[in-house]
Length: 294
Image (cartoon, rainbow, N blue to C red):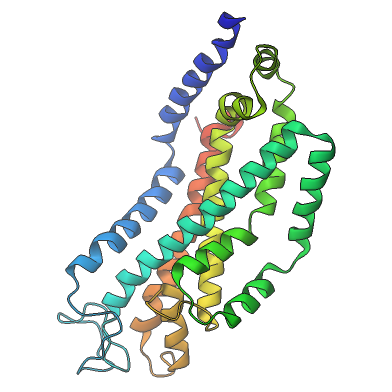
């Protein structure tokens, strides 16, 4: 039995090597992750090279991009490049927190419901369906409207707590198909508990699917946060890309011809979410042999 149980890990190692081989040769995957990594690096390193505070008023309002202000200034003289790099950092933080929390909850609910089945599955499936039918954006609007102090952390937590159901249902379906496989039966016969079987046998065989799920949840968190920011329910302190768009709209940047105020944050949000979805398509091609380009 021990020899048979060692087959699955060896097969998984071979699959990983094969996936890595095709991953570095997939243009969609490489391009998508390169764009995300470049913007992430700018968000992490950029603030270190900016002297001005992102919300500090300056003596040169409405200045176009130039040597002193790389992306120009707002109607209040605030440096847009400073806001942009700090906003990138906040956007990635929301994506990681919201996507991470949603992924963890979705995995726990999906694995437990899919593996145990029965009454446990019915209860968790009912809970998932209840959350699914609740209008998520409306709930977030109400919560954010009544919060006295809103922060990037709080925003990410609430987003994560509301967007996990679809991930749970998808993981539950995958777990249903894996729980009857031979390697799971062998682990069960050897006396392994439910948690060990899920962590050691089922989850590793779904690692690629789980990673793709997190990418989608990450992109969804960025979009939801940007939407809340744009309608004025973003963080009350700090700056984000969505808040930059909201301020640009509020102070008529488009009518004043100040394209440098709203184009950078809008382009960055589009680039992050678009690159993540392109990378996700590339991952699907890498992990699905039928979709691989020869």
